[in-house]
Image (cartoon, rainbow, N blue to C red; front, side):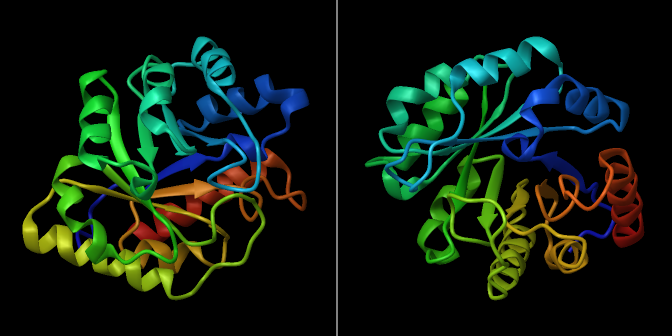
Length: 228
């Protein structure tokens, strides 16, 4: 594992204070947050509804921070073009909902966005290894997709390690994102396992137990400490 890699934070905006969203974005900019994670849920692939393209458009109009769009939806090919126009975003699909995942990935890249895919906790890395050279990012779901505030599934750390080992052996330029209970306690183990992007939600920077700015400072300090 490359110890000199940069660890990035992608705040999960579904966990933000929607009544004061402009203040949240100001803090992202103040602390040089590189990505904003946007969960899109359709009530079919996962049993929840969240955000949509109009919300992404408003965020993209407000800030130059690139979006990290996680499509937890069915019929992805029909919706990818609506999300690809926002400042060259990452667009992450669940390959099991696409009849032809490589075609979906190629569609994302053809629209000048950065393709990725998410691995559900029940899915093995081996099932998707032939997709890895085609994407810029893999998102390891460390909880079942659909809701914030769930507990980490410990065996998912092994999945991060497996991906990190695979990209090292194959020489693939690939970012590993981790999404699910990215808490103060779990972050060190996630970074050690090989994670490059941390999707931060209610168990870290959006915790109700901390002032938001204090949480941002704590996150930056923890990353510096663990990335050494």
